[in-house]
Length: 491
Ligand code: SF4
Image (tube, rainbow, N blue to C red; front, side):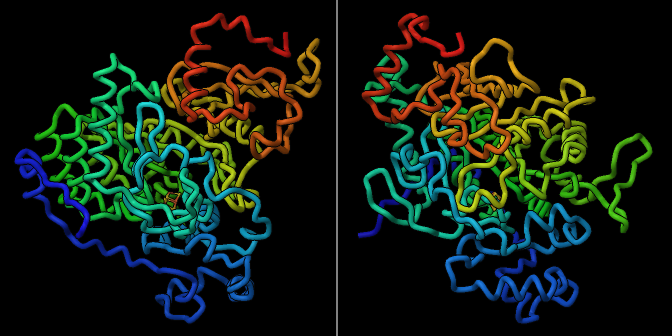
């Protein structure tokens, strides 16, 4: 017998029955073969030099195989933007350096610990869904390389298998049952202590690769399950902005008309201004006469169409990647340009400890300096973005890095880094707690600070599993005690 199927309600049908599914002509090139065999369109052949291809072909089939680590993929639009941009080339072109050092983990942030149902990560008051395992093009530094390359990872029950995608029926059943238990228990889940699951992020891969009918099916089913806000994470505005066409916008409008109570947040992923601005043949930007730079017209049209809805909030987030955007000037232009058209600058991320992270990550302190420099001269509203790292305990801001020693504090002779927990994966009360470590300019991940922890009320260097129910309850109990029980090493 097949798996049970989700049955949409009459209200959902009001949206679903009106959806159009146009075909999108992304002209995608998959893998290195089109470049190696010369079957790529003539003007794209030179995207890789013969020597680059030689090196990549030589390591095929070995443990350094680039395509097994992360499949190669590019759209025609991104190729056009990248051919005049070294930063975008680094983002999308495979390089043999990627697999020189394969340190890292297949499940960064212990994601599978938070997966009560296939395809769902339940953290905080929010759920993240894997609804697709590919994107229109692939970023070499992708944090979901294990999903996109369909690699087996260890699940919470100990089995090792590929990550599965979310299914509407199972996910909406889980949301309903979690939220019913929370409501019946005075606002907290009786077993995990968590609050209502209010917000769901559709992720993957890039959900914008799905047809409008699939997107609409997710939106309406989540709305019926009582979700207060839906997020959709996408890089499609950079890879193929024409995906945001009238048929998509009509579907969105119909969804909003039918479910006006549900908030919608589009989480965009622009790493560099070259992904949205028009460039001159010599690699510069052209001014529009008002001191701003001109956009690529298709990207501008797509962004304006989304932002002008008013009810869709658009928020950009981007990791800081070596060779792509570790450049304060580029990030300054990115933040100004996005804010000017109504896109909020949400997060910059420090690199995660994915497999091969040493090829992509910028040291944490350097990333902080880059973001800080980029925000000098920006107005307050342009400079909202914070630098955050996805610690397994929760999103953690790199709040400050001191330039010099902190007099009088043992261990702070070279200065300190101050981390601030923005949210805990298990629950809210951890927010705002800090961790202070002695500086290590080479540090790429938290491990590199293990020998210089000065103060850690945030528990970033504790071994306790924050998902473990016993430790969660101990923690909640602990919360009600005097925080003075903490003995900061810095005091
Ligand atoms: S768009 Fe996101 S999910 Fe897709 S390849 Fe790039 S980083 Fe990975």
